[in-house]
Image 1 (cartoon, rainbow, N blue to C red):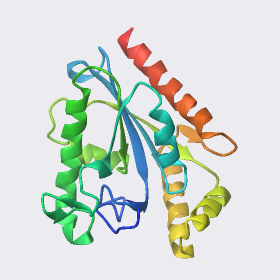
Image 2 (cartoon, rainbow, N blue to C red; image 1 turned 90 degrees about the horizontal axis):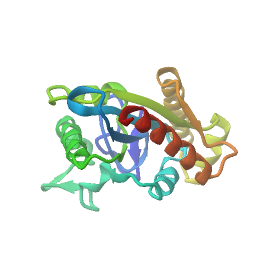
Image 3 (spheres, rainbow, N blue to C red; image 1 turned 90 degrees about the vertical axis):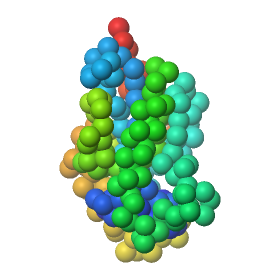
Image 4 (tube, rainbow, N blue to C red; image 1 turned 120 degrees about the horizontal axis):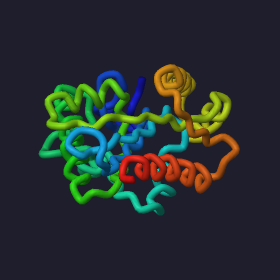
Length: 213
């Protein structure tokens, strides 16, 4: 499965292997919430993932209206994809992608320190995040949800972006795999971005309230 989402090959070229890039690919919104359950005081890590065309970028803009700190996996590299002199978005840097994933685990943990929810746009699948968090002290438990739309709607959206047919079909395959692995769904079919964002915020707030009350 792909995890690029702006036009480069990048570390997330294969979602099973990578982490981030900039054009098409599975991304996820990670929400860390502070609470009294979980290891060392950390409650569950809430993750929203979705295949290309699900509406993740639009959702992120809307969710920023809520009181969550936000960050994006693509924010560390410069505009040309370089980080510490390395084009981290290039397939030639694939050996560094696991380290980049681990870096984001640590960054997210630091962002969590003030005690409020933190939302991170991230292309990792559950098993990828688990691998990245291995060896990390007190990793939080995770809750996963999926941002999705029908395959017909996804084809329309990706065709409008100028995607080739083989790329569209790969995204359809990605969506099917995520449906099999992540049960909780937020659909963007027939709903405004504001409605979807509100539903996501209720999900996060409700879970946070359960863990802090």
